[in-house]
Image 1: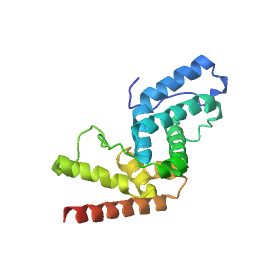
Image 2: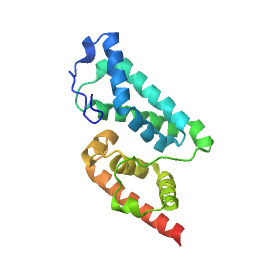
Image 3: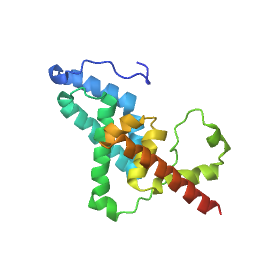
Length: 187
């Protein structure tokens, strides 16, 4: 299977046997696991906790696949589960009272960099990643889903259950906050 192609499946999973569900979840893990892990990390800022959350996401997928209605793609359904789990964790007492100590090492996807990224030195790139992680959650999640997960505004709107105009506004504000913070740091 091509890693970039979406799964083409019947959306009626109620007839799937345990073995079929296991194979489906394994295929979903292969196709979306790494992207979901990076997404979870941007919320919790801890690789170990991000891995735990993604394990919960795929366990939920296995247990609840028969409730999948096919209104969105399996990818969007998994992203929605992951985002909800991340929100639950971020709202939890343990997250609010423990300072995340892991540093982000490989935030930007390994693909052909844009001209802007080519111009950024290693130090500037590190500062950019750190500044993104310091954005308020609603701006950070929108920014990351749009720029790093390559989701459309419509998909983000669906995932976050928010109006498209709000998503556009959050992207604009996130860019302005980043620009402001990066300009202040370079002075």
